[in-house]
Length: 279
Image 1 (cartoon, one colour):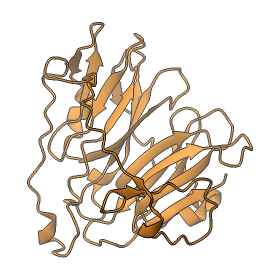
Image 2 (cartoon, rainbow, N blue to C red):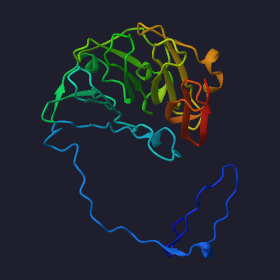
Image 3 (tube, rainbow, N blue to C red):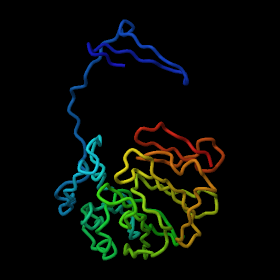
Image 4 (cartoon, rainbow, N blue to C red):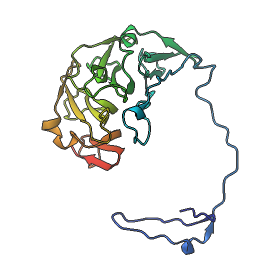
């Protein structure tokens, strides 16, 4: 704890589930600011990623709800990283705003990136892409891509909010798999993949961010089960019914919390506590 007068105190081995009262009179050490200039390696620059431009649309959320705390139509661009063409180098997906196609950049051997035109992304430029996850949806050993639509500039049941699955041909070329994702018009907060039931097939958690025009009503979140061929069904009510309207989700992570060999889900969001679901 660093106090306004630069005194500090450190609490070690703090036990959980208690209320702590901190007093400035207990802070006997002086906080020393590190003024050392650290040199960090620059991962991206105009030399390595010189034609990446995100173009945000000019929608004004406050014309819909004047008391919103912040813009909800500007949650992107999302970013996902994977080796999509199996050359041993990580490539980058950037989600586009409404009216802008999402972009895929392929890494070259010298560390630069080349933009790769994907017709499937161009066709879905109407959506605001705010969440993305690379994972092997069809079990063929390459990285497929789930993209979640979002934003606040659409109506509650606008098809532009529908999540999409793009299948990789193994060479970094993507095609949209129609009807792979059940109908769900969710303004997405996050998407995370894991093998929930131990069948070797990657399933999905889709966290709902907001209902357009109805902030702060909690949107739907979903558990989607994979048949192994990249076809997903909504299993939320049977697998985790309490997830359906958990809140305005902003992030999640799968990890084995109780050490039983199965992934569990940690979810965070706006105006909600950290929540843990054991599977």
